[in-house]
Amino acid sequence: MNYHHFLAILLIFLTGFGPNLPVCYAEINTEPLYTRPLNVPARSNAEYYSASPDAALVMPVNIWGNVREPGLHFLPIGSNLHQSVSAAGGPSETADLSSIRILRSGKSIYADLLGPKSPPVQANDYVFVDRTYKADLPMWFAGLSTIVSIVTLYYVVKPVKK
Image 1 (cartoon, rainbow, N blue to C red):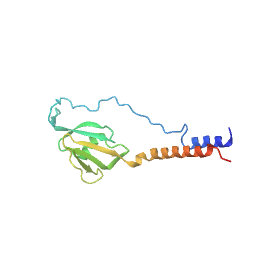
Image 2 (image 1 turned 90 degrees about the horizontal axis):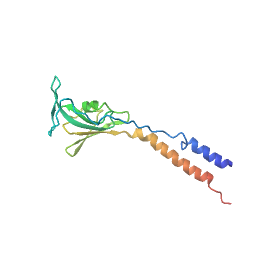
Image 3 (image 1 turned 30 degrees about the vertical axis):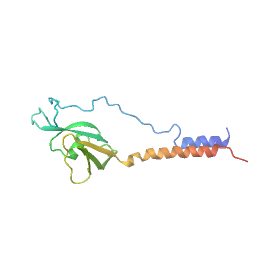
Image 4 (image 1 turned 135 degrees about the vertical axis):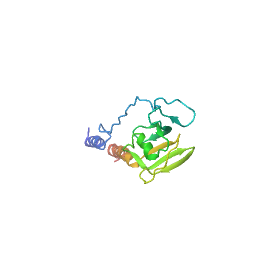
């Protein structure tokens, strides 16, 4: 092995194309996506009743995206966006709180959870909490590092014409 090959292999390992690649771990959630509150029958309309002592009416709201517990949640009628995201376990570390989309009857409503006013949610709304672009920066830099490694390896190892 000559000096150029050794230098190319060392450069590959130093730029992250070797054994120091970031590792992704996926958590397996064995719980169901949603659970209906106790004593709530499956009905065709949008409102459900609760058998709890305060007997509050609840409505189904789908909350997806970067929240800790995404899925179908049953919220008291009159809940707002803050309460719906809280019911889903709160936002994750990668959530973009300034651009939350509520899908209602085929129309999109954009809301800012950081703002002073929180819009109300209605039965059968879909709430999507997007991912912030800052969360993807390490992935983009890892990809750029890999491309730079491959280009460098090509120019170091390619034969020199005499």
